[in-house]
Structures are given as structure tokens and as C-alpha cells.
Amino acid sequence: MLVVAIGGSPSTRSRSGLLLDHSRQWLQERGVEVVTFQVRDFAAEDLLHARFDSPQVKHFQDVVAEADGVIVATPVYKASFAGGLKTLLDLLPERALEHRIVLPIATGGSIAHMLAVDYALKPVLSALKAQETLHGIFADDRQISYPQGGTPATLDTALQARLLDSLETFHQALARRPRPVAPGVLNERLISARWSI
Image 1 (cartoon, rainbow, N blue to C red):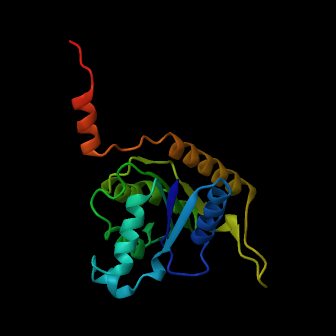
Image 2 (image 1 turned 45 degrees about the vertical axis):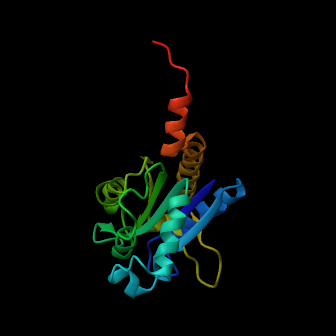
């Protein structure tokens, strides 16, 4: 199984990035291969000028095309998800998430931004033809503490439980995901099948 983890935060010290890291570790412990892309790792010119022929963008498209599932994590700014993430998602082909399970994750300054996942991010994932977009996780900034002095960040108990529950659902959805059949193989199966009327 292959999962692509997409981080939408421009910052290296990011609460949404922290949730993405927790998700990656949890999946890897269960034998799932996870490839992570952060929006900040792409050349700004490639994103702003929509350079579909950029080697880095092509690599991103190729890995997504091979994935069974995608996790998208973003901070919420101005009641919507990160603009850099939207620019990156715009570089994917129209049906890039077809036959893929998607888990959205968002963090914001208050629960007032909770609906940004449903009303801003999910429509974009739907436009990319995601097979199934799971309920998703929203975390209020107060649920993730970043202590000073290099101590690891921690999640509050309720958020940790919701994240683990969502990851378990995501993992189960990946396992039951129907595998697409290539048109040539399907055609051959139909021709060679025994039919009775």
C-alpha cells in the first residue's frame, strides 16, 4: 500500500505538519509506505506559474498516480485552507484522486474554522474525483502544544483519540478499496467469459 501525505503549511514549525507526521508514523508502523510532499519544498516559480513540466511537479503527479490513498494536511487561514496547497493541488490532473481514499486534516486558531474542511477543502478533493473522502480531522491550535526548549510537541488526549480513530478508518478503507482494472484486461475478461441467456 502506498499513501501520499501532502503538507500545505509554508512553515517548518506547523501544527498541521505535526499531525501529518503522526499520521505518517502510525501508517508506517503498520507496513504502509508513505511518501511526503510539503508545499514549501516546491519551487515557488513552479507553483505560481503552473509549470506542469517541472521535474519536481511531474514526480509529484507520478507518485500520486501510484497511490492508494492521500492524506492532505493544512492550516486554515481566513476561513479557508492554505493558498499554496490549492496551487499545488491545481497542478494535479483532473481525475488525479480517482480510485483513491483521502483523509483531510486541518488546524486553525479556533473551532470557528472547523467548517473550512467541509466547505473549502472537500470540494477541491471532490473535483479531483476522490473515490472516498473521509470525515477528516480539525484541530484547534490549543489542542497541540509546542513547548519551548526542544521538547517534543504533544497532542491533547481528545485530539489524539480522534486522530487514531480516523487513521484506523483510513487504513481499513485502504484495505477494502477496490482495485481498478485496466480497460484492456477488462475487455479480455468480457470476451473470454462464458455467457448464458
